[in-house]
Image (cartoon, rainbow, N blue to C red; front, side):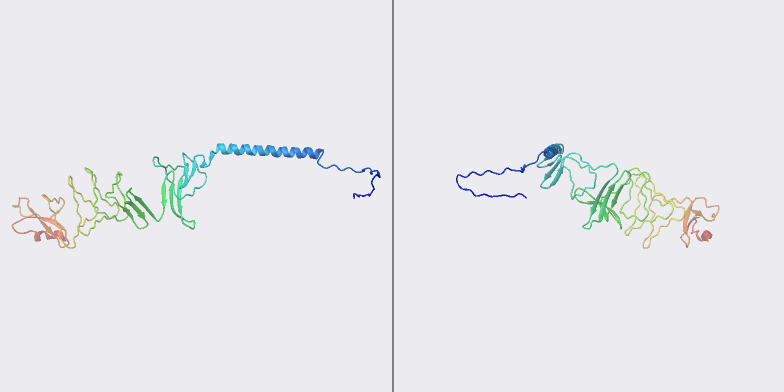
Length: 291
């Protein structure tokens, strides 16, 4: 403890001051001072390096008051010029290109576009892969530039909204179930073939079925029976010549009948056969064909 003494004297009296035995030096001296200066110098060097790196990053990344590099911040959103590469998923509300250029999305694996609801669940997905384009949604629709539906597909049906559906494949079109259409037509000078290799083929219409061949012939081939049925009407064969080359013939008539004239007879079950024509009908004479 430092002790201080105070002495009172009168004018003209000389008092000798006591010698200071203890001297206190204020400040940092020696190796501490050198370490402090070295630490301050090191902080200054780090500050200069950080400042230089910051300037370099701003220069390389093209930072500006309006954006970064080719990325510009506008009142409508973000505008990106040139080509860009995204390493992670991109979440946006709308993507569109400039008026004078197209929008290109490409990837080395696949391009996937997802639509999510408010809960984060995927409600629609478009996946473009190296071998297949996959669409997952409740309904898939293609529209024209006027907004008219051209093609619509859902779980119940597929609707073609165009005036004509053209199939150009050499094998045609294969349908596992029924097809509803007002017209089936081949290209000019091409054959139209409707066939069912393992099952039956039926054509139904509420107002009639019309089969026309303007520049060729019509063939109906079947391994079993071919049935023409009309519930309310008749079957009309309107042609210059009606040929039934394999029609069963009844017993030959008299030898004097050499005019090669025949009449068509019908069995009770609808079977047709021919009989040599005579003065009167000869169907009853050859009715054994029906048995």
